[in-house]
Image (cartoon, rainbow, N blue to C red):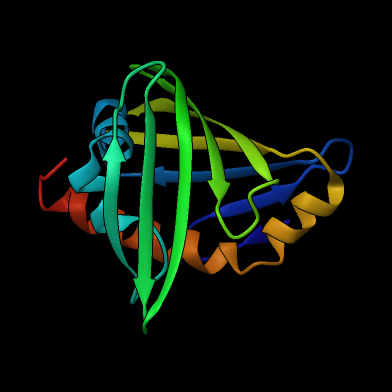
Length: 160
């Protein structure tokens, strides 16, 4: 288990699954918007210094998405499909195009804590323990932590 300043990341020992938990000063509706509206998502996703370009984004059950992250002349492309979008839950696939055979099934749910606070729970299921460990060892904790700090700023500005 990894706990950064604000995020808990846990690799399940029994199944190839990663669990992520973090609290936000936001409502579930605001967090859902931040994850499904392309302009908002592009502003916060990924580590510091990364700029995101949305290639396509169809945020509906059955829709798909693709974005390319840029930093220092390097590009990293990601794509997936939205399988379910509900007010308190989002299910999607996630593929890093640099490893196209490693598809994660991601489920996010938003637990309303009251007083304008929400706990984000996320889990990513991959097809093998090796794939899971590759995700965990990729530096994802830094990207998640820094991305969520940027998301805090988007939320504080009232943009979501």
